[in-house]
Length: 296
Image 1 (cartoon, helix red, strand yellow):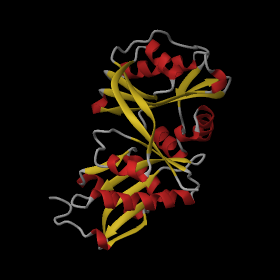
Image 2 (spheres, rainbow, N blue to C red):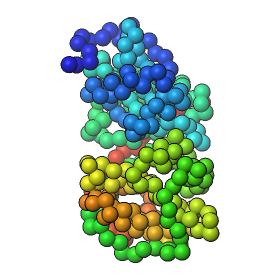
Image 3 (cartoon, rainbow, N blue to C red):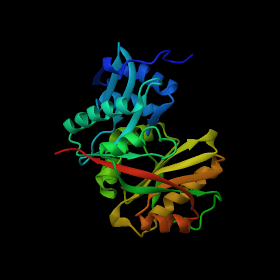
Image 4 (cartoon, rainbow, N blue to C red):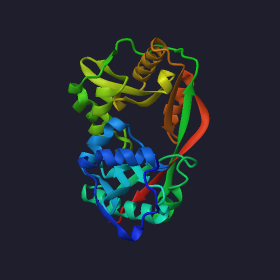
């Protein structure tokens, strides 16, 4: 049964903040609507709703649209979730949601919003984003590794161990040293990945955390996606990244995965050289990154 039997009247729409109490309705909207975008795991949704960086579109007390952003870091945040109910006029509904979301995240210190998606899968929303002022920032290139072997094991003096909840603060600090604000992961994302992810490993040297990597599992364990690999900038070139990649390959083999994928920015030639050398190949898929600068 479809969620909405008749076209709702957008003229009766009301906008309000999303809260934790919207979890059930938001989850249902995501499940039922054909027009949705989310760059998060379902396990992250409750914490993001509680954080208050989202907007709900209601019509006659029914939830017909949602927009949610991540926590701003250094003035930058990312669109994490958008959904519009079937039967609702997409362009005006999405415009209302995004304009309200822009105002919401500005209150929390955001100056720029980023979007990462797919021209094909997100064709329903990109024609709205660009007229609103979202511009192409860069592209993300998708890589894959089908032969699960390692050309080297990396720095064996580095200890690789599973991350624990107590490591969160150190991981967040390392992440912010390794990446510019728009590419950092906030504590909500990292804490969820440590607690629930199938693979989250730390690299330690002399008792200090000098790198980390985490991956998600897909297609019944057939595919591992390397979400993040980070090495302290002062330790670049010391074999830590190779050590982490080798450990990930061993994990994939031990858990019967057949494929490892990862994404990297088109301008990150250093990372691409490492991935090519380690046996990753570009798939040909490229994902656009759009940027919107909030009015000052």
